Each structure stands twice: as structure tokens, then as C-alpha cells.
Length: 464
Image 1 (cartoon, one colour):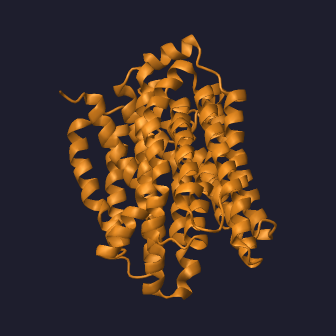
Image 2: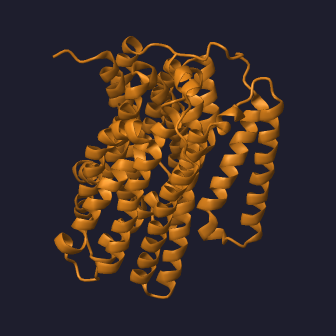
Image 3: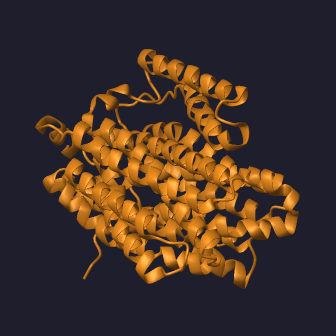
């Protein structure tokens, strides 16, 4: 049976997202090896291999989405692949923490360029009624890749060294680039002025970058410190100026009319709240398995895997159901399943390791809820957009979710820091699970209240 063109494009662009997602989580297992090579005195400095990546990725997304719409999604995707490969190679050759941190920022910018472009390349290959399913598959690949990070990373480090987790990206990116040059069709916003609002781009980077910086550094600086407050105020000022610039510019970096679309606004707000809980959950579950139950890196990776596997299984059917019954209803159901499973885990888990009765059932069920929700947020935000706004809409949604991820991790990180100081890590993780459940249930509520299906005119525009 011949593989359709849409399926080929989906497979290729999903490869790029898989690499970006994998590289976020795979580095967790390399941290100990990096400390061994560069001494434990580098611990605080080395945390910037995570923070620097997150800040650069979040800050670049909006600008990358606009550039992709103006100059071409294919060009953006292919350039992002090459930049990601270049950054990965630099990471692999890094001789000190400073070089690794700088190389990770190069990686992050490459990932931010290819991410909105990849989804924008997929959407035109499918009719409107099938886009939610395609986005479900696209998102499932990314989610499963992130979950496989600890397993793949542990295996590569055991066989080779921590450098292998970066070098492995290079041949995959180059093969994807070679295929993409022939397979992908260029797509641009034909109505767009080729001029890019440089002032808006700078303000967008400052707005999101400073906000993310304040969030990821809050544990070290303190939420009430003058430094944190000053950075947050600077971010707020940059945000106000950015909105003003978008309102007055003839070629705004972000078309504010997107925010008038209820499905875009609901998916962005709900996605931010959902990401606060989702990424915090991954961190907390790993901490419980390793710090409380004493699991090793590989064993904890395999223990967590059933959840992402179920998410991958349910993601594509969730997209199909969302198109039929409404994204708000499907996401709300998924959030209810996910949130209630976290409440149950919080109630029934004990400090005595018993995986099959006290962890597996809850991670399995939560995976179903995640599968119904996580990719459906993306399709809710982008499936019904006009083709000229695919990359910009994807960038807006991804930016909101990236900020949510940083905020959620900062909050649970603070909870665990306080718990460790009180010598009661288990209590801190239980508090964190309560926070996760609350955020996930709130995300479902947001979608029920805010989400509205696109109108007939909006559907007609999306299909044109």
C-alpha cells in the first residue's frame, strides 16, 4: 500500500520535533556524568544547560513563527534542523561548562525555529477534518520522545559517554534535511510584507526571555527578592511595549487578531495551565522513584514509560474525537482522568516500593488522560487557522506552554527545596502532586468555559 504524501510529511516533520523533545529530557540522566567530569563545584553553573535552553527556546518562538510565515516554512524547518545539528555537535565537543551552555543555546534556537515551521508544514497536507488527528500524531511523537529520553540517554551513556547523547542528533538531522529538501513544499503567507518588525522581535525576546529567566531562577533568587521582582517588572514593561508595537506596526510580529479567536485564546491559556502541571508531574514522578524508592536512572525511565505509551496510543483518536465532539469536551475529559489519577496516586502511594500496585495503575490511567489532552491543545489552537497564520499560531501556543512548563517546574522545585530543608522530601512530593492535580483540573475547566468551536466562516477560511 502506497504511503500518502501527507503521511510522509508528517513522519519527517515529527522527526524534528522528536529530536527537540528527546533532547529536553535526555540530558537529565547526563547531569551526574557532567558533574563527575567537571567537578561538583560546577553544579550551579551546569544547571544553566537546562535554564539557558528553556529561556532561549521560549524567547525565540514568536519571532521564529513570524519569520517562517514570511520567508517560508520549508526554509525555516530545514535551517532549524541544520542549526540544531550544529548546536548538538558543539555540545558533544564541549570542553567546559561555559562552552556546553553556549552550545545548548544554539540548540534551543534551532529547535525554536523548526518547531512552529514543522506543524505549519503538516497542516496544509490534510483537509480541515483530518488536521486534529494529524496534530495528535505529531504531538504524540514529541511526547513519547520526551518520555524515552531517560531510557535512551542512560543506554547511550552506559555504552559510550555523555557526549553520545548529542552526537546522535547530527546524522538524524542531516538525513532529515536531505529528505526534506526533496519532499517538502514551500509555504508562505502570500499577503505578508517581507519586512520583519525588528523592534517587535527584540521586545518579544525580552518579554518572554525575562519572564522565563525570573521563573527558572526563582529558586535561587527567591520569589520576593529585588532581583526577581526587577526582572518580572522589566518583563511586564517589555510585554506592554510589545503589545503596543503589534497594534501600531504595519507588519506586527504577532497578529493580535489571533487572540480574538476564542479557540486560540482558550487553547493558549489552557495549554499554559496544563503545562504547569504536566511538566511538574514528570519531574515529581522521577524524584519519587529515584529519591524515595531508590530506583536507578534506567529503571525509573522504564517505570514511567507506560504513561507516555498510553498517551501515544490515545493521541490520534483524541484528535479525531475532538473534531467531531469539540476540543473543549475531549480536553476536559482528558484533564479529569489525568487530574483524578494524580489525586489517587497521592492518596494511595507509600514510601515502600510496590510498583505494580502503587504506581503502575495510576501512571497507566494518567497516560490515557494525557493522550486525550496534550496534543489536542495544539490542534485546538491551530487546526482551524487560515493557512497564512499556521506558524504564528503554533508559535503562540508553544510559547504559552513553554512558559507554563517553566513556571510549574519552578513552583514544585521550591516545594521540594523547602521539603529537603525540613528533611521531609516525601511530604514535598505529595504537595507537588496536589499542585499537579489542581493545575490539570483547572486546565480542563478553562477549556469548558472559554473554548468555542470555530464559526462556519472561520472553517471556510481554514479550508481555503
